[in-house]
Image (cartoon, rainbow, N blue to C red):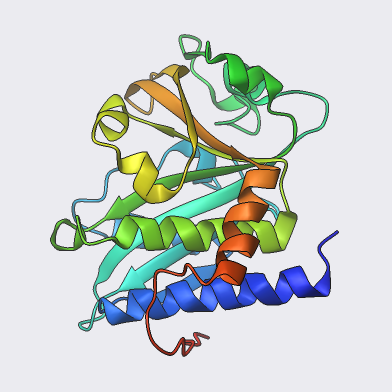
Length: 245
C-alpha cells in the first residue's frame, strides 16, 4: 500500500510532467473509457490501428484496470496518444499470458483466428508475475517527434500506474529500431530483451517480432518517488498543473 508521502510525491511528479507537456504546446487529458479512446484513435490521421489489447470489442478493460492519455495542440488536434492496462498474473506470468493469446483477447477461443500464434522467448518475461502493467499504443505526431515528448508521456504513464496500482512490473513491447535508436532510454525503461513477442494475428493483419522492455516495481517506485525528492524533474520553473474535466 502506498503511504501518504509517496502519494504526494507522485502527484507532484505527474503535475510537473503535465506542466512540461504544456510548455511544448500540448494539453493532456486522461481517460478510462476505452470506447472513447478507440473513437479518438480511429479518427486520428497517421495513427496505426490499435492492437486488440486496448480494444473493448476484443479485450474489455474493467474499471480501475486501465487508462489512456491523449494530448492536443493549440488547435485542439490530437498530437500524442498512449494507453496502459493492468494484467493480474498472480497465477501466471507475462510470457504465458502472451503465448495463450489472453494478452490480446479476453476470450481467445472466440476471437482468435486458428492460425494466430505468439511466442515469447525473452527469459525475463517468465519472471514477470503478480500485477503487471502493460504500456502500449504510443503514438506521437510527426511534428512533435524528437522533442522529448515521448519521455514526458512515459513519465506520466509511470506516475499514474504507480499511483493506481503500485505494480510488480511495468513493461512494453517495441520494435527493434526503437532499441537500436536508444528510444527506450528516453522512455525511462532500464531493461530490454529480444524475443518478447513473435506474433501473428491473422485477422488483425499483424506480424511482429518485438523486444520486451520493463521496469521492476522497485525501479518504478525509484523513478517516480526518488526523482521527485532529488529534484531531477524534466520541467523547469513553477509547476502549475493543468486541470482537465
